Length: 264
Image 1: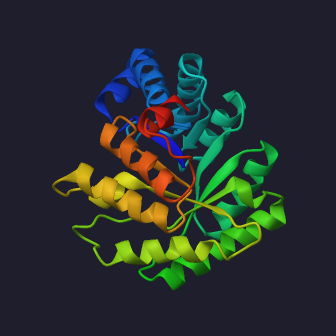
Image 2 (image 1 turned 120 degrees about the horizontal axis):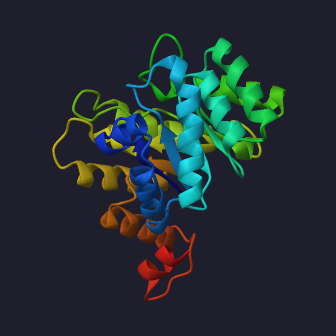
């Protein structure tokens, strides 16, 4: 289970202020902290306050600053193609692009970029019409992304399909459809694409957020989830992941399995 740390994002006050003041300390702190808490990637996002013209420079700074503090690859998160490419150019190791939708014009930009830089890419199961309600419609859009990646030379192990989780308090019926999408995505190709979700979306605006996040992550893992963008600074969530790995026979049981999971 690949955990992608969500915390280096300009939507958070400390990261936003770090960006505006060119202060590396909050980025360094969260890069190191998320590395200690089992993150495999660092999601890096300039946030909504950075103007489009400034995003490439800011993204380059964020990627370099994060990687100088922790030996982790970055999930470069932006809707701005220039910012994505600036981050890829500055990146050490195998980056991940977050993300493309199933709109053809976006796939024509981001999928060749992934191939050019040998990066993984997240494909969102949505298009200009929005997020579909049913699993069948999500899977149809996922298939379009699969076909485009295959045509452009992006291997399936580098493609992460995101069925798009929506908040339980406003789109409760979508939760089960996302789980079914996770199951069906695994039969779209051989080898199959991988899967991911932005976990905190399920609890946005809800009470008991940590409980909802942990519960939905466990359910998703049982349906074949390969990765998730999460708050890795949540001990109970990490314990849940370690427990699921044992019960799904992905890790070998030992009495210290919680400690062993973190040590890896």
